[in-house]
Image 1 (tube, rainbow, N blue to C red):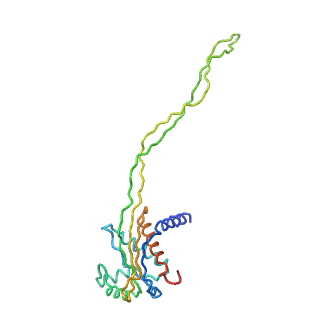
Image 2 (cartoon, rainbow, N blue to C red):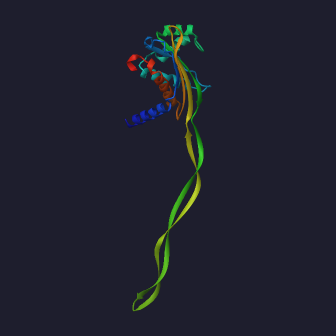
Length: 229
């Protein structure tokens, strides 16, 4: 439970950092026509294997949270492969794909920027301190048998602190970078009903993708199914 709370807090912070999504909405469109949608998978960014799948999954999760009915990704892939649809879909082709999938709209997008988190080594100052006792020696008279004799005695007067500064390597992980753009297309007419883009930094690609998809969907909240607005 504690781990879930920490994860939720981290995602909340990330969403806050991604609260500047740039979006455009077709205000004249009747968004009550859109309930069931499908995500046309994002392509991998410059051969960064798996990046497209991660971003696609993030948008699917955000669409579900926004209240949309979502077509299973495997079904989308199957239709695209069977019909040999590749590259960008024009309005006519989008209408065909939408009809085959039984959806009202398709979500398209692309990864516009991606930089992996990286580790960097920095040499930092480390201070070692140690303290040594300081003694004062003084003479005093002590009785030995029937005689008084001179003797020396060491007494603690304080401590001497020695500081040694040394360089030590430290490994730090620098945040990765992710940029996305997305648009929703109504299959009935092929028109774009909204589009958005955003970018962020995060320690993992998955966290960045979830943050950006959530931020873009949040920015177009007036277009969500009425039950979740």
